[in-house]
Image (cartoon, rainbow, N blue to C red; front, side, top):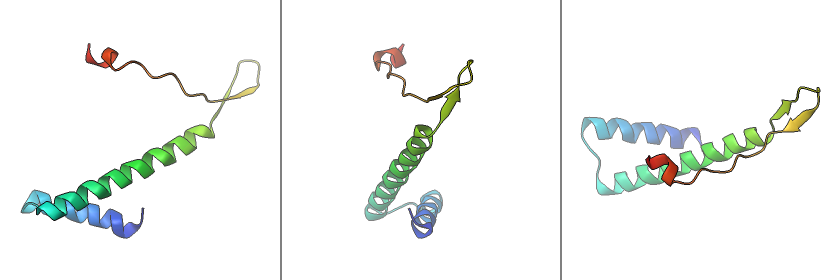
Length: 76
């Protein structure tokens, strides 16, 4: 994501607070936010994929992904 795109996200957020957005601007804001979140998640996943945890015996083990909890657990 470029600096110009991030600046546009901030510009649209400010305009939304001050005067509101047109339908086209709302759609643009939604697309930019989705792109930002997608790139953020990809970057975070990349960082997590390169993390190793030192074990008690001094060896290093790559961090593994934990199984996801079923959604019904979040509702209780």
